[in-house]
Image 1: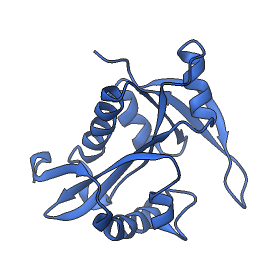
Image 2 (image 1 turned 180 degrees about the vertical axis):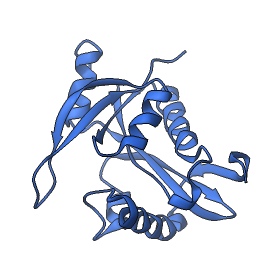
Image 3 (image 1 turned 120 degrees about the vertical axis):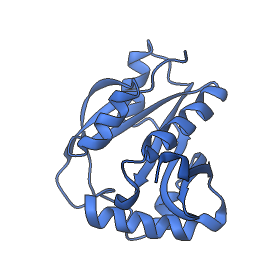
Image 4 (image 1 turned 45 degrees about the vertical axis):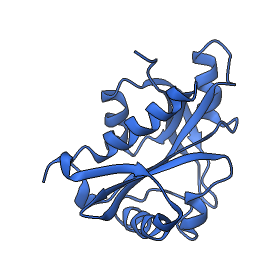
Length: 173
């Protein structure tokens, strides 16, 4: 199968169950996310969520991404610094995951592009943070032209903070 078999579309309420099940599977394999698996539906619908997308393969949800309002977190602050101090037009790319069996089909890339296009059309620039251990995600963002704006420590409830990197989406064009 090629990436042409994958459909990326805006997430609907009816997709939450399948998205939550996919998230739990990804966590079991990758340890991502480090929080939120106890209540995956809540993790997939955080306060400030502007829009979310799912990727489908053979009518099954195999990936997910969301864009949320800037929350003042490390990635937002680093992005604002990189943009000369203006954080009001920043949003956060979050909740990106792809089932292991759907990888190598450009699913993560297609989800990231959908989120980036939405942000640009909304006059927003995306930021994100990614844990240093998530090397495949880092390679994806860098291949798509995202700029690393610094390293931070990602706080994990009940555990020691882990190293993470902040990224800023490429400018339009």
